[in-house]
Length: 85
Image 1 (cartoon, rainbow, N blue to C red):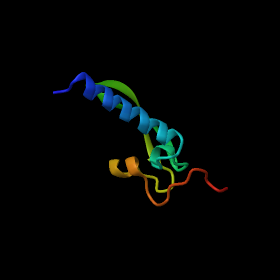
Image 2: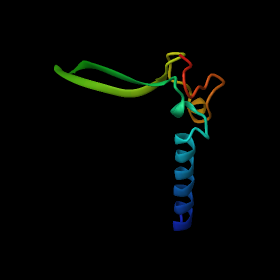
Image 3: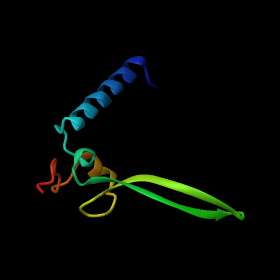
């Protein structure tokens, strides 16, 4: 059961991790120069009705795939803050 204290501790941890990622203290996909937005648009027909969609996701620009969640969270050996060119 969550208590108010547990919730405050969890929010503090989340805030700490976000600040560490923003400051590049915690090196992971979210602050890597290779991490790039991927927006897919398209449509499909459902019951004779055209339904348009937009998929907002991200992928590694170096390997052109979305890494597993563990890699997104902890990074990989190819992490770069600034691409050198």
